Image (cartoon, rainbow, N blue to C red; front, side, top):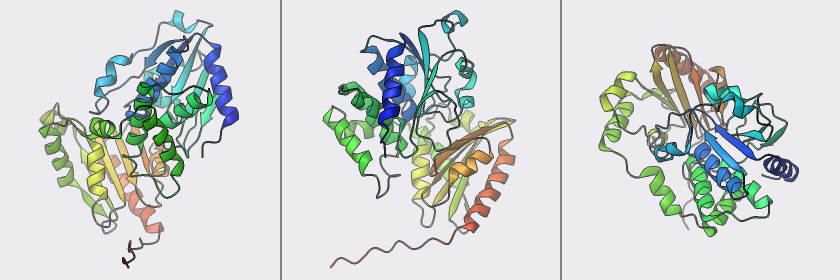
Length: 341
């Protein structure tokens, strides 16, 4: 994993070539894309660069809400984009369409892409792509370390936050994940705190957010004799529980902890004619392949999509697809622990 010497050198050259950088990341940002943006911005600024962070939002995840003031949601003026000394860096985004209205910048500026999604379909002359990387912040850490510099304590805190949010505090990592922990160890040595990171991810939730999770749990429907669970959120829920934090991370943790469940699907109504979907897996089912059927993408075990269709229609189709895909897989083998001698 993460053996990209030439790619890292090419990106570092790109990051030294211009004076102003616009850093863009995907709509409905998560902890990884926000933290990667902040860490890269810090690195560029201490190299004397001018940096603007761009993200359309919404910043409705409780763990990233406080970072919204650091980002602008609209594209810069056309005259700014005509600056020959400006470039764009797109982080944690597998498809330019996931930039929202900010995708208009692509094609107007030189672009570098740094991402770890296996479904990346972007086309840029300068890229650092690695689907085996557990987070985009790990790739930012790789770049900074490859430059010969150390991460500042602030950059290390951002990088650990992104790594932990994208791995659900390491729960998604398997036996082949030694590199991820070595990266994490260097971040802790540089000033990041695992305890503070955990508190930032899971602390400070409102009581209303717990009631909202209870609503989602109440609706959870088992598929394939409980091998998967699917639930949903309506706009009426949003009005009833506003301004409750939208804590889907805890929802996934609770549902994947149900005996026999290895796949979770969550459908969120955005409007009468649109919805988003999120999928999580702890089995061999490739949820990124399912998300692609709905115009999205992601990772084998964590993926999502936005689609211009009603949530009821998508819920029904997603249910069918998950049942069909699970039926193609062999039944799960019971997890038997050896007896302690």
